[in-house]
Length: 188
Image 1 (cartoon, rainbow, N blue to C red):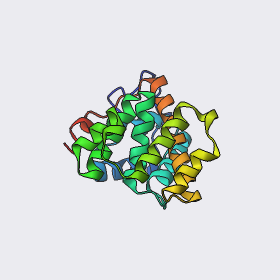
Image 2 (image 1 turned 90 degrees about the vertical axis):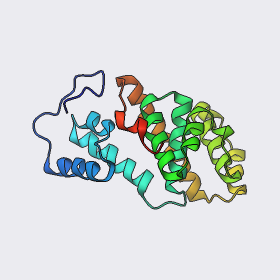
Image 3 (image 1 turned 180 degrees about the vertical axis):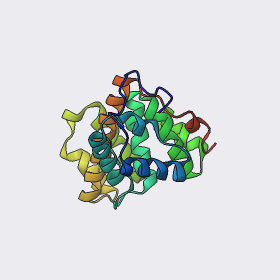
Image 4 (image 1 turned 45 degrees about the vertical axis):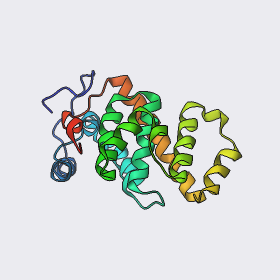
């Protein structure tokens, strides 16, 4: 962990465990880098495990939502919150998963200019409202998702992904988390 990835001086207490080193090696193999968010959490392996377990379940686990849709949620939430780290990292993921660099940029700047399905638009309107005005969520918001074909389980997953990124955005902002430079050039 040579490069400073946050504004805080938090270093791991002792050597990283074999499990964490193996996880970082897997990231290097699959992504070509260890995401700085993981490096940020590495000062406390229990917190790192909790973060990665939740992330992996929400973003990679079984769901009626595609990986692209989950990344779109991450970007819309991060756009509302102006989270530099997540916009860079998850904007790159949208570009990669969609094969469309313009879509990644549109999602970061203003998702409403993108050519999306009715279902995707309803999903993103829901997460935008949930991010901006959580106390104003009503049955009508869930009904709008059901109307375009989302199941109640899908609605749970949409809300869970949005909530996770609202939390992550706030931590990233609070500690001035920096994205890996490699993300800027990915899938362009």
